[in-house]
Image 1: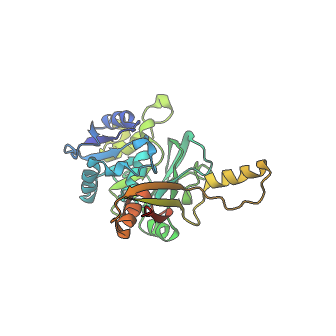
Image 2: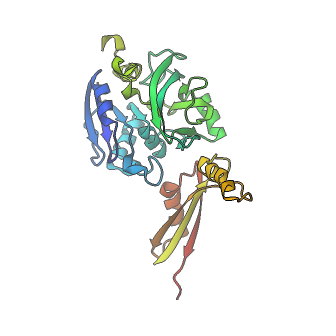
Image 3: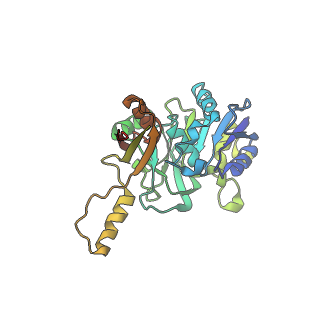
Length: 223
Length: 81
């Protein structure tokens, strides 16, 4: 399994994502200005502040040449994971439903949260028991997931909720405690917390590694 | 050329914590008469005078605003003859 990690101007979590992916497979950086995915098997759109968060978070990155390729790759069923700013970009690009609004607290949140797995039908959660909990850090100021009510009903009906914040841990006011969603087909996924920062016991949790391992069809025990 | 002003604000029903924070600060000035403070942004564009209303709508729908969470108003100020 070869992962491609997209770097935009202003991205800052691409090296951690690269390391996480490299722990379970091969990984390389992709430059936003190249309309070329270099034949990778999975695409990670990592966190940061692409284009300085100008206009709206994620709004400008979707016009980068690489994003046309990502959209085609996604439409063909390729696995795509957006993390934090990457999640915001995928929503703005229309590859995932919904939008991310400023945290209700108006504060930058930086702490571990427990995520409850809501579906295992994505490449990044397959083999991870629905209802089980992953401890992963969240760090963002614009992570309040929102969809209009009628679309929220669709998400539930189509099994598109990927992760929920555990009871009482919603750090941003996200609707229905939603921390991550998937597209209808299940191959494109996004979440606000950072699995790539939870891949080493020294840093408190290796739960994040399970998402990368799932995509690479490896179990964490063998990593 | 003409000047287009696009006013973008959170849709009705979307919580606006920035607006709420400002509203809570106003009484500190001794000003108690404000409610429903909403904060948006203003984008000004110099545009070709022949730009169609449809063209401007496209710009707003596809980039300047996110129609899921924001509404917008466009005002075109023609230069005086």
